[in-house]
Image 1 (cartoon, rainbow, N blue to C red):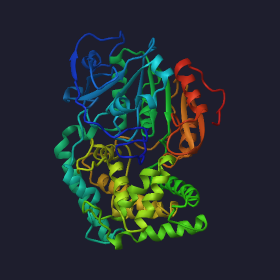
Image 2: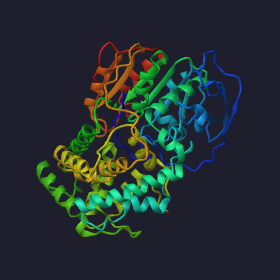
Image 3: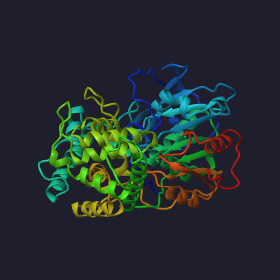
Image 4: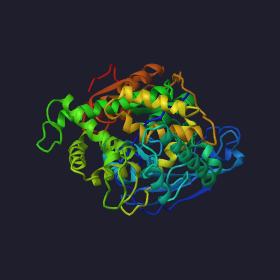
Length: 511
């Protein structure tokens, strides 16, 4: 059973507000278990702990720390902390509803702390304690740590000595990746080898038990669907009401995942061009195909123009790739994307850096909110297999360009190349391999897919729903990443009815 990589906004899945600086009041203690279930052998101390909830943040939220083994196969080797937050039910709670925004690297803590009203409507808040957590290696939990802010700037925004896309540039990127991997190993320690999706799924079961729930109720978005799928495979008899939104197909190898995903972004960009050409401020003219040609000319000129932002950073085509991806996740960002492209045409790269910084979690003062980029690479290297050499990296670039001829090359420069070269040099081998999920014996699992989702293509939701023995496909027709809480009443009602009342759709409602 495996997971596949998903390009995502680097700390901000579409729901998350800007990351805050709130102080966490967390303590943990080991005491009597809250449930009567028999703990897994060797994990009795972990499953027997209680969460010491403390008031934190605002709005009546409560926080705690739960201790988990670094290595579930060797629990005596050490522990790691999981930062957990909950919004107590406004009514009579039927139990807890865990939520994860995706990533890998998204903060479930911030997801609940900053966006509760957006991601959990009144019906869910009345019936559940809404629970978020920072998965192992993320943010307020024991974080994967590689570089400081200056090092991350060099790694993500540095201007290469060789032409971008050349063989010499790939060699240069590989050297950067070797240094990055070595720094991650030195600064993170043993946890670096255990931030895989399977370990996170085991953490979810531990959290479930400590919360006192007999079954896991879960709403996972984007890469959070990987965690949910892993959970169903590992603990099928403990699956409660589970919704996987923006699903990932676990049967696909990385060489298929990246081209397929970049093709999704290309499709979203063509849809954006239809929209843009109807605006008076659109920098492109003529037909969509003519606008595609104009876009390609603009993108290919970036490195030679050497445009500098107000802070002195020079815009490169990899940074442009990051800047293009960020607003394509959400149709509501298309006006801002049109403005960014118009200003780039006129020689102003500042809006492009604004998008890239938002994607990477970089603040205006040069600091970084959280560690999502570092965890992203660490987790993907464990959750899939990558090329063994730069010839494989080049072959991946070629496949991505063929699948996504407008934006794919630039997206790949900032994602595929960084991940592939890093994973070639990672100090730990993969934990998971590509294979279909089945999870026999589970309760029904809702799998949500959006027909023109740029990050997790609709075909992935169709595939996962068909693989899972109890998978139920729910389709949203439209643009943007994920389906729930995006203003589609049909989707929101279907999900709420399932989570609150256990109502399973008799057929795909085709929302």
